[in-house]
Length: 263
Ligand SMILES: Nc1nc2c(c(=O)[nH]1)N[C@H]1C(S)=C(S)[C@@H](COP(=O)(O)O)O[C@H]1N2
Ligand SMILES: [Mo]
Picture 1 (spheres, rainbow, N blue to C red):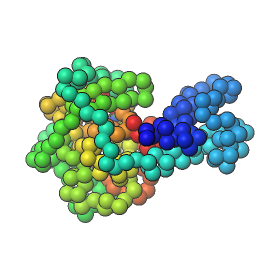
Picture 2 (cartoon, rainbow, N blue to C red):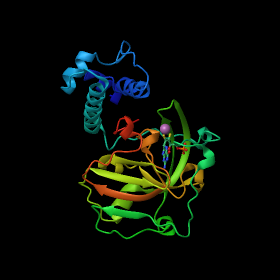
Picture 3 (tube, rainbow, N blue to C red):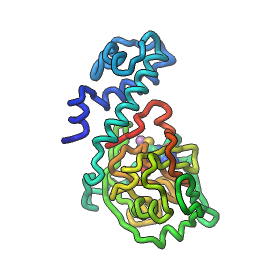
Picture 4 (cartoon, protein in one colour):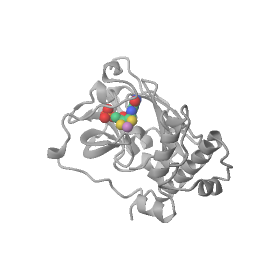
């Protein structure tokens, strides 16, 4: 059964709730028209009941939406199947050119220098040693052709290669019972994921794109590639990885995007 179907059996249309939440945030400065609010998902009364918030003003509505979104995180976490694989595609289906996206334009892409680069690894890990890129390249690599889905309304098929992230986490002695893995990037981006997704066999610490060193626009020196999650959960230009039980949030997640962000 698909996640969408399971959510709808629970009486929740997750994507519609999030879309409305996004619209609501975007409209906040204007006078929001609440008539269309949650038309496709929940009534205001239903939202109030679910969240236990009284929906008297925008602030409370947003609080309620955040509560429902966190509830969705839990539901998505419960139904996430760690053994279920995302589809893979033949190389002939790779989208060329592959789209670039970031919270800034392509002319502002961060240029990270390889020689001085060190990956930081902190938090609930036994080995907090920093990593050079060549040390990561020396580990066994895999690659896969998968579909990247962006909530802005596009998707594209690409080929990423690198170290299976579960291998990396075990290698640094990460506490695999911890709740979250967080990422800090060389731009101001940051995000975090649940441990089951971090350990998923298709989650890779990607060092290459289409068989070549990951180019700056796609996140040099490394990105976390997860075909089981939406585009904004896949951090580019990773400079630090930390394992924690404290909810770290994320760049878009802190602005109302759903944290689990499964695709
Ligand atoms: N560091 C960083 N990572 C990021 C972003 C960003 O702005 N900065 N944008 C995210 C979003 S919303 C998308 S859709 C993908 C785009 O990846 P691409 O440029 O390889 O298509 O990167 C994600 N990771
Ligand atoms: Mo995105």
